[in-house]
Image (cartoon, rainbow, N blue to C red; front, side, top):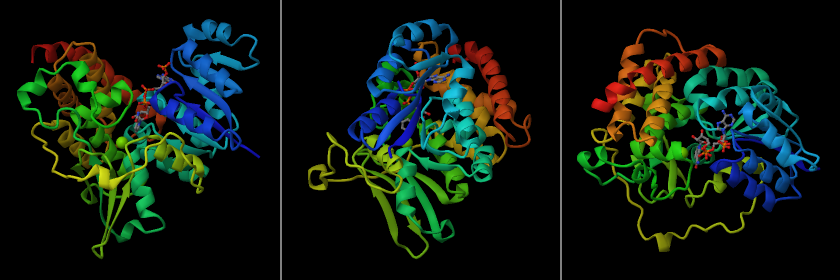
Length: 391
Ligand code: NDP
Ligand code: MG
């Protein structure tokens, strides 16, 4: 019996890596629902290739184009939030949650409420509503398997070990394209320069977050929730080769690390395998002799202030990560449009965190509350953007 896999965010970078693996293991898997944002042609092509049961787009206005592109295929489809939630709720053995940004919260949570096994790429679910997601995963019997490479490496390194035996967990950062740049050069960087990731191939938003190190900040918060480990036992180290992804330091001094080539298919395959190891065709095997040396250095929070902002948000324990994420999404989009300079991202996020400090006294109790905070902070951040232009 093949396993049914639903992919939320199917047309994105993680979605396509997932599609490649599913095609390589055709007999093992069949495709249930596929969800995209607004690209009807791309989603329809993928749905036909993968012989999906159902395809849904978030953008309601793209519904007619999707129907047209799927006509005669026998694949059911829909558009708008209801269709996306329907796709997320359909019967599936594994749901790959890879919508980008806070838009991923609702569909991911819809699958979680049904007790599904979720291969979680959408880190924003845990950043914006981590308490609610972890509580509800336990309540509804859902399994959360980490796709994010660092967390996947940590999960593999941890194995059956106890978090109470862990002295600390470390996630690595490539350092991004600006690792060796001066502050002045970073401030003048273009969106294309920020998106030119040295080791990973990813979506635009996460590329910019990797350049600012906000991605590592989001990942610290993600690790805190996934492994129920406090901020004091989590840290970040810069490792430009992106071969070691996560390290578990045990209290007896032993360290277990997770290594792999920087290819997201490796952690996705680990999740899809559900305990079995899936072979990856056209993958590059790790060759340490060819790599020559693995180097490590501390993260420079002076040039990469987003990391310190995220640490402070994590320490807040309330809604600061939700606020931070919303402001960051607005800031990154403005940077990509060329409206603000690179450090405008950190400035806007910091101002939002200061402005909303004390407004929300507890972590969001559920997804609706997280999304209400998200909407409020987005509106404020959008209004504050012109001040960033001057900065
Ligand atoms: P992409 O931007 O490449 O893809 C995003 C996907 O989400 C696309 O399929 C897009 O559809 C879809 N989408 C956008 N908006 C909506 C919406 N409102 N409702 C439903 N679907 C929507 O992102 P990535 O694949 O890079 O990242 C996805 C997630 O995985 C993010 O949370 C990211 O942080 C995380 N992640 C990514 C990694 C990577 O290597 N890329 C590594 C670790 C984590 P459309 O194409 O039509 O817009
Ligand atoms: Mg990662």
